[in-house]
Length: 308
Image 1 (cartoon, rainbow, N blue to C red):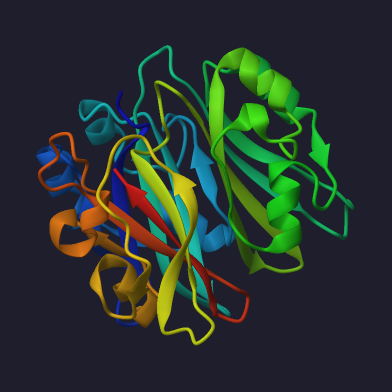
Image 2: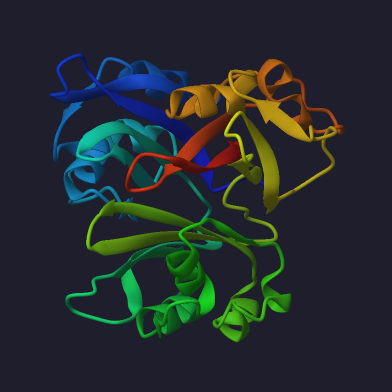
């Protein structure tokens, strides 16, 4: 079982805010691709990070062919076939872009989707873009489906402005594409809000199958009432792991760094930064990325934790 997401990157603005440069990267054993990527810079609208910056919403590249992606040959050599970019803004200022680069076998079943509500054009939320692997039946249904506020996974995230986690799609009454998901083998889902493009609202959804999870482990943490610590809200587990702490204080480890800075952070060794993510069945280090979800005025609403 190998997760769909293989590489995670954090791209940050340079000193004058004209280009994005690599702040951190988790590349696993892809040393050549890492070396190729580290010196790169992306202007607004350039490459996958730059496109998310310019568009102000999540971007999916289901294939790199014929796109603005600048590392196509190097990605192919590394077995990376698609990419996702998620921008983080504070008011008009770009704070970071998180990029996930993905690879999967031909029989991969899963879905990554971007949904949008534009109140000037529609009262519902509809599919903007999606990547579905072999889940063709589910793709056809999704492209024809629209949701009202509070309906379905996209509509729920849109209404609450908060991430949503569905560990078992077949039991989730609010997942309105449940029958189609079961037919193609999708088992769990995550929805994330992005509110950087008013008046439009954007929602990103990740749907996993049992044998091909989107990521090794996923968690959502939210600030406590004082905003001085994070508490666990929910997540998706794919194996036996260490004991999760009740709270993580600002500045403490991977999650605490995000709470104190408002910026995404990455760790190549979870033993030091998030030891509960280490599996009890033989993991020795582990890599993880933590990403804040900000409100339109820059407040941290939640922090998502991705164990590669």
